[in-house]
Image (cartoon, rainbow, N blue to C red):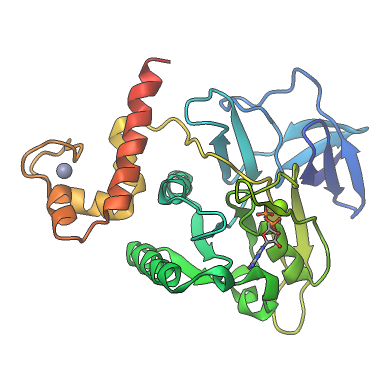
Length: 307
Ligand SMILES: Nc1nc2c(ncn2[C@@H]2O[C@H](COP(=O)(O)OP(=O)(O)O)[C@@H](O)[C@H]2O)c(=O)[nH]1
Ligand SMILES: [Mg+2]
Ligand SMILES: [Zn+2]
């Protein structure tokens, strides 16, 4: 019996970095389950596990994890990674367009799991004046809510620009497929760690080139401490976990804060009189795009009742 860290998941097997530094391919038995979590993968990258002759026999309790559903209403959920310090969500204003709904759903999930989120806007070299203005607006919006944002061109990235945000931590890299996650990773390491996809003209979407999650280790140097980064397969949609209707607002910090001034304690901010959130939408203090994302999550709750 030995202990190790899951550094790669292929769906059917796992690569575990054992405490003695060797990597070994492991499997799980068909009946392996973790109590309380229903997911398609009971073991995820970032998990600390017990290994016995190539079999994963136990998973240590997780400090945290990020889970997603393949579609909004799918019952199948998938653990993207476990035991992470932060999520870097890579988004693009254009080529492809990352919708604010996607961003907000992802951020809400990070809030629900109490994982810090960082928004990295990529491909700024491709943006015209209009799109650059849109980028500035989006950055200002998310900064005002309390999220750290930055803008980059992964194709010409200087690692020093991003190292301070990553050092000493384990970061889950996520975002729609085609936004440049693999490109960012390769630029960071200065060599091809993972293949990048060509954008297909027809759909302006990246091909699914990364199909497995994998953890990469960045060594320390004089200027920074070591860190780990987890590349995940591109995500198309992003279904959230099962939120209770009452808790959805908890995961939109600015809506939650404003909601304390609503006339009714159980205000859903949809139709009630004396709603402070509605007031702030009118004054522009709460963005309509955020409110729409909030409503779309509330809608999921309704639909899930009829599942
Ligand atoms: N112009 C431009 N293209 C980029 C940038 N970052 C990534 N790409 C391209 O976008 C495509 C998808 O990138 P990839 O890293 O595979 O995306 P992933 O699916 O998120 O891993 C590739 O053709 C990259 O060369 C960027 O900053 N600028
Ligand atoms: Mg990729
Ligand atoms: Zn309200």
